[in-house]
Image 1 (cartoon, rainbow, N blue to C red):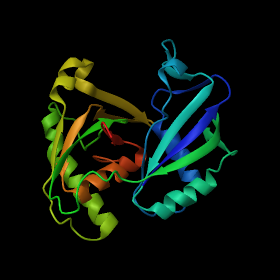
Image 2 (image 1 turned 180 degrees about the vertical axis):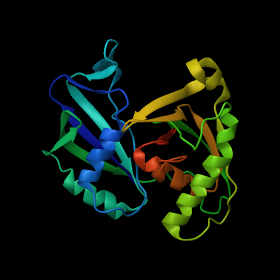
Image 3 (image 1 turned 135 degrees about the horizontal axis):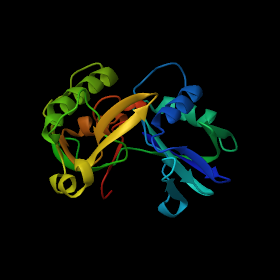
Image 4 (image 1 turned 90 degrees about the vertical axis):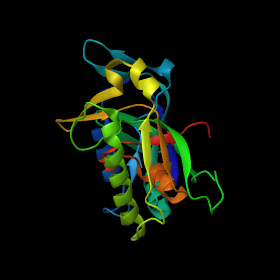
Amino acid sequence: MRRCFRLWNEKEQRLPLSHLDLLRDALDSGRDEQTAPLSFSDLRVPAQQRRIDRATGELVILPGAVQWWIASPDDDSLTRLALRFAPGNFLPVGKAVFVLRESTAYSFPNLVAENTLSLSLRFSCRTPVVTTGVYSSANAYEPLVRQALLETFARVYDRPPYSDAVGFAFDADYLRSHPRGGTKRIDFRGETVDGILAPFVLTASPELLRVAWECGVGERTEDGFGFAEIADT
């Protein structure tokens, strides 16, 4: 399941351009002790409502609506989180404060029949995909993404998937056309984290695709990395 938390920003506020660590702090303050895996997006701010202060490198958020997406395979955990992040409450994110307006739950899209063995889906990255180490080639991510996905599945369901075949590839045209090949360097609590922010195609069984949608792709997904949306759904 995913929940979209709709926030309201009452005045111009500033956040670090990389603010996943601040969102992780806000999330930890609102949920139970560690339970099921969880993933989340950065703050989704409409283009006309944001700018970057080139002098300070900060994200400037103008008044208006903001979204924050949180996902988990544990529906009950998300429901409890929604009760804590209830409408009318305030959500502090670093020095910024937002008003919680509402949240809406979304289930994994019913894209295929249950007996489908494998399916290729295109995803749009919302936060960088991260794996251990720094790689000169995006192709090096595939075995590590596969391993992370299988480990997450085993943690969620306490069994191996019916099929452990996983294919993963970033959009090569996108990487060629973007500066630095889509690589991003994120500051997370003083630590430098390298990843790639680019569309990708994930080929796997429906149950593994669902885990990717609910738990994120790659490593450090509970820090907000690897949050992606299925394109064109």
